Structure formats: structure tokens, C-alpha cells
Length: 402
Image (cartoon, rainbow, N blue to C red; front, side, top):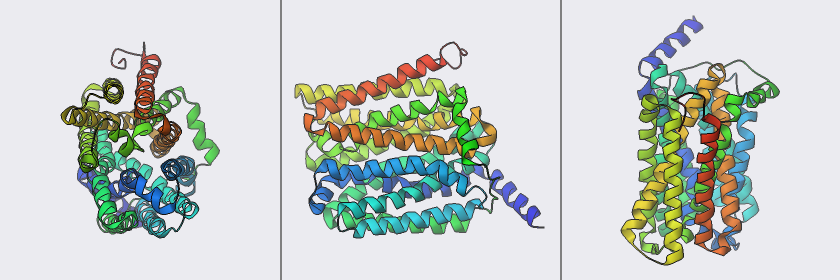
């Protein structure tokens, strides 16, 4: 009888797959707000904790590295758990961790709480992505993935600017407390609406990581690292970087909103475009757009020619190109390993945060050299991602070439 009930739940979920993924997107919105909100109030956090901006920025790096390491480990440990219970539990951990971050009296305790938050995020995001791919027909898979990733991108559009305002008006601790509350609300939503879906078979971590030896997988993941690393070399330090192109503090929230609006649009367009034209063409355009937008911002910083309209347009393109890459990358991985989709998605999620951590570390190391160098390094990394895409797909088929 229980198997019959599970089958009926799965049938109902599949019938309304894209609608069901909106619930999952609420959780990724909470995860995204948590992961990205720090960029908006990093200077004030540094002042409160009596550390440099670069040192405070390492809380982002630690979150990213912990996420990257924990995602495959926790995917193995939690493989057999029912999906709804797993996702709700991950959001509860995220909420508790953000409350601890809000109350942290110093940088070491803040970093410890960020590791706990990374554990919750590392379970939730790939789990939500894999469930969304299973809820829809194959021809709608990229769109379903785009909806779930859309929670992350909406967080950059709405959550991060609102967090910046909350941090400005009430302090960064209150902003993190609001993220904790958002995580709990998302947990209630997932528990209430999501169908009961079973877990999968338990596969040893060594067997899971063997997936990395497949050429089709090994050629995809470095692109995710490079693409996210390019963007986060600047984005983690977006406040000083945008000041370097003439953006006043009073317009910083608007610029963060423009980045996020571009991220939302880029992600959604990428989902539909990937289903229609294939992932490689979408990735090619995204990496080129990212390289151009970051190089142009670097040129503005170097020449001192200021234009608020031009800066806003470039930030919009930067955000769109950053988040154009995730749906096609996930689509490529699931196509390469359809029987191991949850693991493939978790490896991509790890790669996202490896890129975020590496980019944040690179940006922090070059923060003292000025924004021109940061933008130049970011643009060069995006261009390298395009070259690697071109090299790894050239000659495979006409549909696969950039």
C-alpha cells in the first residue's frame, strides 16, 4: 500500500512538475539570499568585527569551500532519506546557522556558523535540482532547472538589495536574522506542498566520485568553476568595485538590483534557449557577454570616464551572463549521466561554490590593487571559460560547437 501511495504522489508531482518546482525555488531563494547577501554589507560587517574587508570576505570563501566539499559527502550520507524530509531538514539547518551568524561576536564564530550554513545549502540546492528534473518530461528539463536556479537569481535581484537596505537601516545582524526567518518559512512551504518522494539507493562515495572520470562530465565541471570564479572575483567585493566605476553609495542598492534583475532574466532565458538551441550555444554567448561586460567595466575604472547609465547597463549584462550558465551546465551533466542525475547536479553545485570561493579569494588578494585589476582578471577568466568550452566541444557535432 505504501508503494502505491508513493507512486500516486510521484504521478501527481510529474503532472504538475513545473508548478511544483516553484515551491523548490522558494528554498533556493533562501539559500541564495544567504549565500549572496554578505556582498551588500561586507564593509559594515568588517567594521563591527574589527577586521579588514578582505578578512571579512573570507567568510564567503569558507562558505563556498565548505559547500564544495560537503555536497558530495552529504549526498552520499543522505541518499536513502525521503526527499521531502531531506529538503525540509536542510532548510532548518540553514535557518539555525543564520541565526548563529547573526549572533556571532567575532570572526571565528561567524566562520564556524557559515560552515554549518554551507552544510544546509549543500544538501538543499542539489537535492532540489535533482527533484525538479525528475518531476518533468525530458523536453522541459532545462526549464524546470531554470525555475529552481531562479530562486538563487531572484535572491540576487531582491534578497541581496533588501539585505543591503536592512543592513544599512538595522545592521547586518538583523539582515542575517531575517534570512534565518526566511529559511524557516521556506521549510514550512516545502513540507506543506511537496509530495512524498522516496530516496535513492545508497552508493559509496568512492563510486559516486568515479563519475568524475567520465570525459563527458570532466569536461563540463571546470567550466562551472571558471564561470562563477570570473563573476565572483568582483561580485564578492561589489561595493568597492562599483565605487571604482563612479557608482555613489546612494546608488549601490540600485546597481545590486540591476545585477540581480539581469541574473533572473539570464537564467530564465537560458532555460528556454537550452531546450530550443542546445546548451553549448547558450554557454558560448553567456561567457562572451560576461567577458565583454567585465572588460568594459574595467575600462571605465581605468579611464575615469563615468556614465551611470552605461554602468547600469554593464552591470545588468554582467548579472545576466553569470547566471546564463547554470541551466545549460546542469542539462549537460544530466544528459551525460542520466542514471546519476542527483550526483551530477551535486557535483555541479560543488563546482559553483568552488568557483565562488576561488573568485572571492582572488578578488580579496587583489582588492588593494584597485578595481581595474579586479575587472581585468575577471574578464580574462570569463574569456578562458569560453576558450575551454570551444576546445572541449569542437568537432563533436554541429549542434555542440559554440
